[in-house]
Image (tube, rainbow, N blue to C red; front, side, top):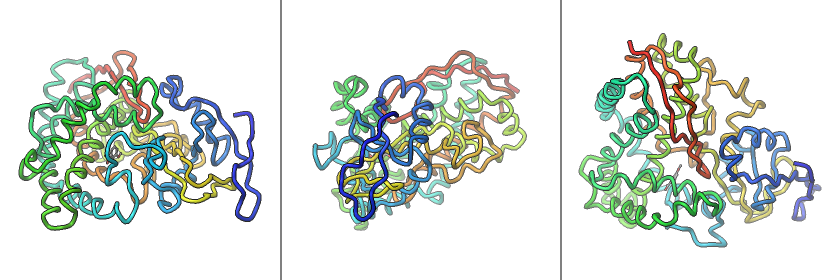
Amino acid sequence: MSTTAPATTTPATTTPAPLPVDDTDAFGEEVLGDPGPFHAALRDAGPVVHLSRYDVYALGRYEQVHAALVDWQAFASGAGVGLSNFRREPPWRPPSLLLETDPPHHDAPRVVLEKVLSPRALRRLREQWAADARDLVDEVLREEEFDAVPAIAEAFPLRVFPDAVGIGTEGREHLLPYGDHLFNAFGPANSLVARGAPRRAEHGAWVDAQCAREALRPGGFGAAIWAAADRGDITPAQAPLVVRSLLSAGVDTTVQGLAALLHAVATHPAQWARLRAEPRLARVAFDEAVRWASPVQLFFRTATGDVRIGGAVVPDGEKIVMFLGAANRDPRRWERPDEFDLGRDPSGHVGFGMGLHQCVGQHVARLEAESVLQALLERVETVELAETPRRHLNNTMRAWASLPLRVRRR
Ligand code: OVM
């Protein structure tokens, strides 16, 4: 964060502000393992910073991240929301019709999926998921110590979500590695991407096969998407790709959202006690955990035209990375941002994004988290870390590999 380079294009009217430069590897193991110091440096350097290592522009402050998220005209998604620029290189899979598109193409799939995953549509799942969560928690609590990543954070979404989509029971072990590779592929082609590459075709072929009409049970989210195609709300060619978005964005994200919530309560005993006294805080607890941990750490946009940010100019066609995790802990926006605190109002956090592309599955994620948390609150007096937890490194997700917990049961 030492040198200062001039902006690279001619300004429209006034001279652009100088652009701070940072040569840190934002996707190196050091930063992925502990992004806090890098995020603080980014925020302090200015509203926009050039990351010289990847030749991209970075936003770390809440104000600019929020502004970019809601300005889909200037900050496009259609050239990809990872480092790769689809204007310059082909995507590794056909682009998502939700995530990697702009209006007007984005809109029909979005409206369809919004309806399929609306709070109203999820009502019929609430009782079943509450019962599933109680069963799982009963099983897990036969021991006082367990690893909450496989035992709860992975087990619960894998128990309820594929059934809700309506896919078959064979091959579900592809879901987590598919998502892990997908989220790595939003970053640079580093060793994390290389590690996933050998099996990506295999996972991808299985996921694609689950998106066909014939592969989806009646009554599930997948069948509802195909029904929308039958009504003409989307085309039959679009339907499988919309189903693919569920299987892409619906598993690893909720696994790590749950893991973040469990890590938060295990390391904040006073907040757990407060939740036990006021179980209605369960919803706030999940959103505060998403703010605090930001399981999805970042997404990119592409500048459409020369875009002014805080007095500097990002040239047309350049990639801009929005550090959601940095914005969610920006002291300019949040009081005591590093504290997990049920007393605050976390709404406005950008952990689910903001604007047009804001997480369409957030009600599903909240229902999963609430189901698990209520079941735990009914049975667990205190919860703490039994051992040091272990990170799972991913280019765009802040993830846990292992979260050993010790509980005192009621
Ligand atoms: C998609 C997709 C994939 C990954 C993430 C995401 C967070 C969406 O395929 O639409 O949103």
